[in-house]
Length: 268
Image 1 (tube, helix red, strand yellow):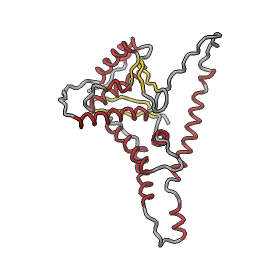
Image 2 (cartoon, rainbow, N blue to C red):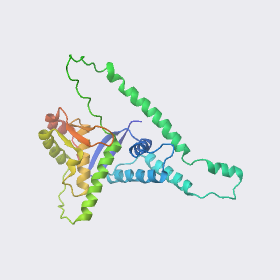
Image 3 (spheres, rainbow, N blue to C red):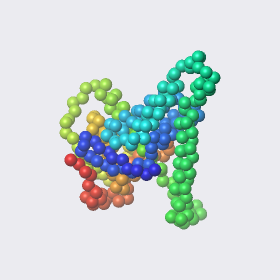
Image 4 (tube, one colour):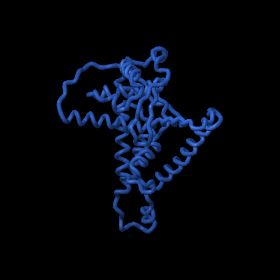
């Protein structure tokens, strides 16, 4: 299921990302986030939310894999079939066909995918227990170290980014602003964030966007965060699903200049 996608903003920046999620992951994310019964999916609502995520991806100029668009078409088809009125003049065989829930095949796909994804996650965690890492038993009275926070998934980051876009739209509607036309590069934004993290070490995700007044600025910062994390300069953490996302400086942040010189961001 591993594959790479390319983020391309204004044809100036290209950042390669390892992406593990697909359309079924996105649907499961929506079902979990909105506490939806997987056996009684409100197709109109889920389709709307699914399209909203695709809109965010398109604002990032993310080259969408064809399966995302195929799933959007499948959701639209299911939605239209559920809205069709039943024809009283149909034969008994046709009536039986109409009694089949249009969502049935989608639910089957989701349950099957969820089963294998859960199994894969369980297997991926096993080596950490006693083969790759061995812990010294704590001394009596010693406080055990806290478990590191889990990194959020791609769609959790999309949630946070969508909130930034929504806040920008509210600000634009509330008042007129004088906006500078000066653009900052991804590389320059990376250095700004690194300078900040050298001081505070830990910053909420949303705090990095507080002064942004343009969509291009938001996307540039988002790409900078992703590139820094890919290079191991920062870590992205979330205490629990739906909790606030935080950015933390990695141990080798002081070696950032060398890392960036060896892995330059492609900018036109």
